Length: 86
Image (cartoon, rainbow, N blue to C red; front, side, top):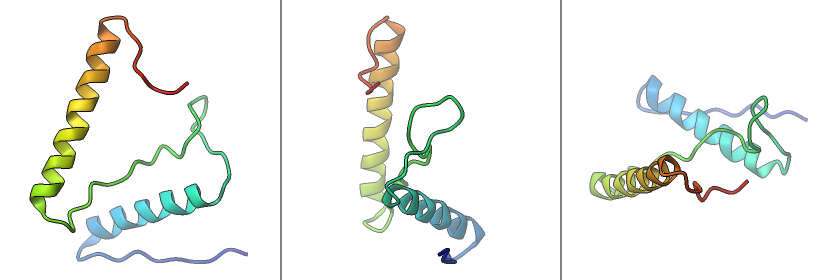
């Protein structure tokens, strides 16, 4: 049985982001395997950086993600492993 769900926000952008986050959670909870055509398994939808704990905390998380992306990119450019799971 399908269930209609709604996402709300203070504006259209926030509502869209909340809807995408809800879709990711629903797909992850479904226990089914998803992938984009020819891609790795996964929904392709990433977690959003929460802002509910303040902009300082969100900035810390953004910086952490950026540092990790840079490490993986530099390692890949050097011919090494990305450290990503196959």
